[in-house]
Length: 432
Image: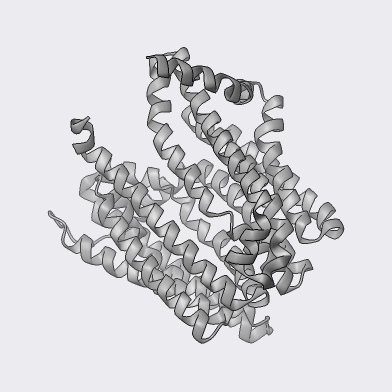
């Protein structure tokens, strides 16, 4: 056990999980302060523009991080040039997009909320340092990247909380994003400059970058569809609902977000076990899948039931009385979280099986269901209709779509059986 705990791989995993957990905690609590102080209308405007920004920012994933890291490990002599080329591409993209939105605001008279989007996109310029973070991950030095990310996150969170008290305006909250990315980039550059065997940032390797992007495209489309499905309800409500209603919806969703870290932690814990058990044979693989599915199902079902019955208490005491309009959204969203987590477990198994194209098709089908459900349910049930649409889409993704695809139907069977077989495995483990 001591040997395992002392390995570089274990320490790297622990730092990554711990760093992500710390960032999630700081971001959540600072966001709650912002939600309470901004009020539903200002927070709704901020949420709408942040949704558009998240979709645009996903352009970074055209170069999949794992493809990037693989190239760094296979060609260490090109590390500086590849990191520099990636950073230049991201920085220039952010600058151009921010300039276009700002020019459109003044030329075409766009609503003032688009200045928020322009500020967010300006922050994208400093995302050039992401390549440095990938460099640290590839060399199992994630602690350096986590320090940079946590420094940026902590400073921006402190700014958001302070400004929410001094001047609760959505536009000033948007400034936190450039601050966060700038601070992260500053620390990244400092750490990268102190590494051994520096070769210097000398060449733009556009052809190498293009090759990695081409390899990454199938994974990019899958992640883009999944992200767009998560953000589209807010973008849709921005067109048909008032800013206050959008704020109610965003606050109800925000209150469920900390549990997404639990799903991420479970994936980090089970991923190596799934990979190794598949090599050991079908019985071991089936047992690992049963434990994975059942753990996710039982944990998130408990969260959903607890959240549903305590929803009034949580809304009143965490968000404040003025967010009473978030009650229905939060109640539905807790159950949507169960379906979303199960859908994510499906994606992990599909990746392990090399079925990324099926994962893309499943996400795309789920997106279509979500869009149709939004158009049908929002006019009937207002913002609660958006949460119902998300619940239907995620349920379709993990429980209905697999029935029509032979190659992943066995995953569905394993998922359905897992809650019943789980306790037998627990009793067997206790006897051992």
